[in-house]
Each structure stands twice: as C-alpha cells, then as structure tokens.
Length: 298
Image (tube, helix red, strand yellow):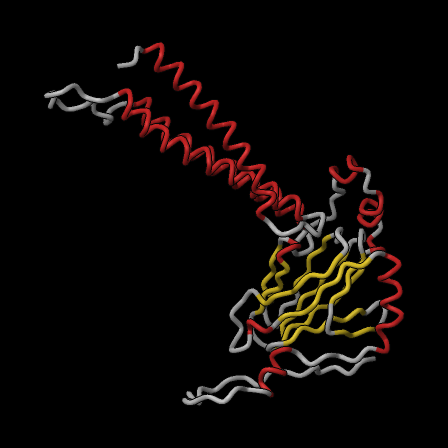
C-alpha cells in the first residue's frame, strides 16, 4: 500500500503528465485538418485544438483515476466491508457539479467569440486585432474600406452551382476568389435547402430558399479547392460540386478579363443524368431532372 505522501506525489505527477499529453495532442490536431485556406480557418482550428486537448484531459483523467484507484485502493484479502460512501460528500458533489458547468460555459464563450469573428450574416465589421499584430495590411485595409470587398453571388439549384460577379458582369460555373482580399458571398437557393461547404475554408452555411444569406471572409492560401453541397438536396446531391480557386491578385485580374469569353459548363449531375447506366430493376420513383446552366454568358 502507498503512503499518503506517495499518493499525493503520484497524483501530482499524473496530473502534470495528463496536462502535457493533452496539450501535445491538441497541438497535433492541427495536422488532422485539411490545409487552412482562409484567415477565419485559424479560429476554427484553435477551437478544435482546444476541444481535443480538453477531451484528452478528461479521458486521461477518468482512465487515470480508475488505474490510480486500482493501485491505491485495493481491499485486503478477506475484507468484505463496504467502501466509503460518496453520497453526502459535499466537496465531491460540488467538484463534479462545478467542473462540468465551468467547462461548458467556457466552451460556449469560446464558440460565440469565434462565431463573431467569422462575420456570418452581416455582423458589424470589427478590425481583426490579430491581423494588426501579424501585420496583414491588405486585410486591415479591406476591413476599413467596405468598397474593397469583392461581392460574389452564389446561386444553388438542383444540382448545379452558378456564380455571378456583379461588379464585373460575369457569370461562371467555377468560383474564383482573390487572395488576401475580403470577399462577401451572397448565397441564394432557388428550390430546396442546400449547403455551401468547402472543407479548407472551415465554415459551412445552409442556403434557404427565398432567403438571401451572406458572410464575409478572407481567402489566404492560393490553390484549387472543391465546393460541396453539405445538405441532402435530392438524388444527385453528391455530384453537386464546383471548383474553387484562390488566385493571386494578378491571376485574379487576368481571369476576370478572360472570363467574359468562357462558356458555362454542364453540371456533373446533368452529365450523369444524360448517361444513366442500364438498370435491371427500375424503381420509377419520381425525381428532379438536373438543371442545365440557366444563364447564358454575358
């Protein structure tokens, strides 16, 4: 049997190890996510890392307490007396009531704080203090001068994405975003509920019919990404994809100049519907015929 002093030392060392391991796992969780392509993605990754570290600490704490009890609280041979009852222990009742309450309130506060920074649904423009610390001047200038925000309309329809650039009078079937410049997406669904979701952007927004939604963000990492429909919007929802590009300012300007001559591509759903494989058994269940690009290039 361990002496009380050794028990306290072992408990202190165990808690210290749990904190170190939990923090390490929280840092490792940054590598479990896709590349962070927007400025706002860092906030979501920070919250995910915090939740992983917290969950790891709780898991290790519960398992560690079981192991600790097995080692230090074993009954002697032929000892059939009952253990110390936990009922009526006010300190223990207060501990396991207050601790989850504080954790839930802390997680809620962190989530609300990040939600405000994501600037979804037209929240007031707040200059990102972290941006000022990191010296990202282009982001600060865009936040201070609303006219520099690039507005893009995103129209969803079973099962096709269409993007309109009203400032340049362009309509395309692929989404191009300027790097290091604030962008406001105006989301609109023409039939059912769809979901705008790019994993590398770290945010998802449902699109409600007859209700325009918008959110503002800053693309950072140049590259090609994939837009998915995160809602089950019908038979071909899994094929409702579109290419998303984050271009450098020069490449974005060149694309705007050349996009006037582009032709809207048919959606994957329309192509799949036109070449349906032969089926032994046809259900004849009614479905919606995929929409073809409904707006001619301007």
